[in-house]
Length: 162
Image 1 (tube, rainbow, N blue to C red):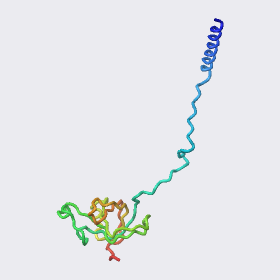
Image 2 (image 1 turned 60 degrees about the vertical axis):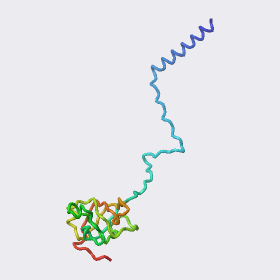
Image 3 (image 1 turned 45 degrees about the vertical axis):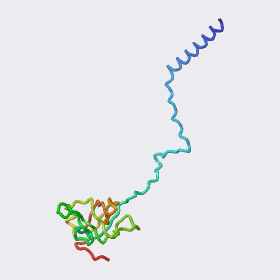
Image 4 (image 1 turned 180 degrees about the vertical axis):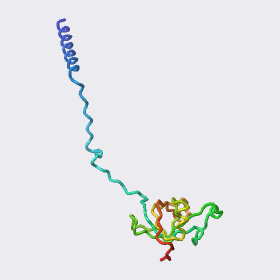
């Protein structure tokens, strides 16, 4: 019996000490788990390597023409009806001001992304367009598309193909 009373008294002392300690000391924050060294995460000072876009912006120059006036191209029925018109950049070369170089370009591109009213202003002008070469929507499409974000006139007349 003395043993039971002694154990009970000891438990009460421990509980009282823990309770008193909990009242005077603020709870301690648990430390953040350590990250394993074999899986480091970038810190604010580190920048992960970023791949170059698969389709970078490029600047090309050439002669802007209506598709119906480009030899070998045929307007679709909507264009023949006069509802819309496609514009083609012919005699294309990479512009010296392009940030991309060393790639092959087609000799002509159908220009998209610029308002038709703006394109009409530059018909039969030597222009420079900046944008991206798009993959053809159909395998039978012989004129690749170019999604332009800007257009700039270089000369009021087209230069002869070289």
